[in-house]
Image 1: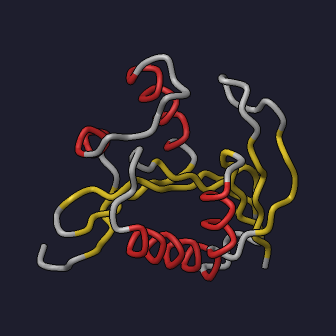
Image 2: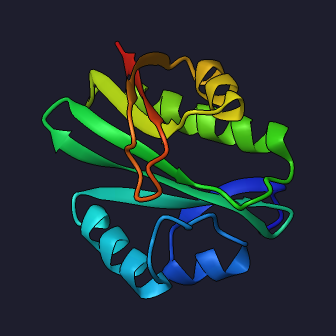
Length: 145
């Protein structure tokens, strides 16, 4: 492809093209199994920029009108501005389809994530205490139409 930034349908090997931040899982196989289950009720895209994988994103329906969006980012995000624009545009398109009146996400409670989700027009809805396997706090983010 000759476009600089674009999305493609996700393929599991795309994760090996980046240093994915999947530390919450015991193994890559465990992660693959969980992601397969998520993809049964949703979809995923790989984010590309200059033929390199910037990240993976997707969503799954929780119930009619509500979905959870997720992002797998590398441990160090390159081209943060491009990454943010692509994710924001994808979330805007997902909301504009009219299929969902609520899109939500959970993310580690840190300043980088707070800044990122606010730029995506999400609002912090609450703290999920000791949410992860490493007992880190997460924030529930929501965007409603």
